[in-house]
Length: 284
Image 1 (cartoon, rainbow, N blue to C red):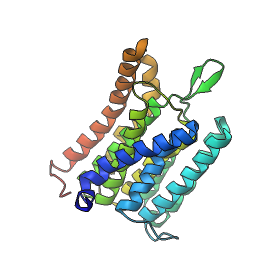
Image 2: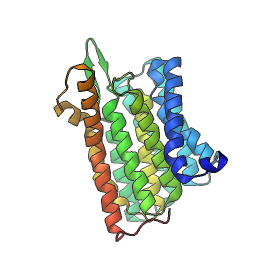
Image 3: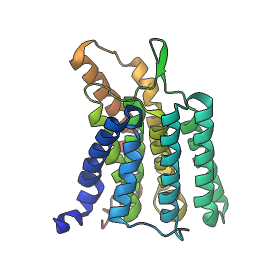
């Protein structure tokens, strides 16, 4: 069993998928609004199991990634428990993301290219924080989880695939682990959506942006291709044009279609990264 858990494929796919499924289910039982927190929680658990618990204060960018992700998860859980929504929740998310990006990026801001990359990342963070993904539902506003979770899945896949091609093993493992954890949440919400997205879910998308920051600023991978994956953030808009059929099969088909469409830009980004390497396979 220990040898199986040391396998990189298991660490970046099977293990986080199972951990994510369990944590989403447990949090659902504790408080339904916290189910989306299982994605970030699963990511942190797998990080600690695979890479180890980083020192505090962290000396590396990956250590900073872990602790900022933990802080974001705590913010998301508190916000969802007290029912924080709207512009205040978006502002909280934006402040956390901006502070995390600056903390991670500061040692690498020694060139114009790094500053430009940081500005692009901050713009993406603002998009994640302030984009409207809610849908009217009766007298309330309920954020459908499928589209934002599919966007997260796509972004994490793009970062993981690009890192894998660029031989950034630890970043690839953690990005793919985040994607697998998001996949576990999507399975809980298919064929019928059971959960909201909330600030905890949006924090998980923020973690994908932080992973992109580490990849962009601290490796030689073809990170410019990650821009090709950004249309995945429009999955909520895509959901509005996909016919929503009545009945269980119809809703399941619509959710699956949204997920597939969201993932397509990620596959384009990974394909472009592979092409720019001359078609050479990563040693990992």
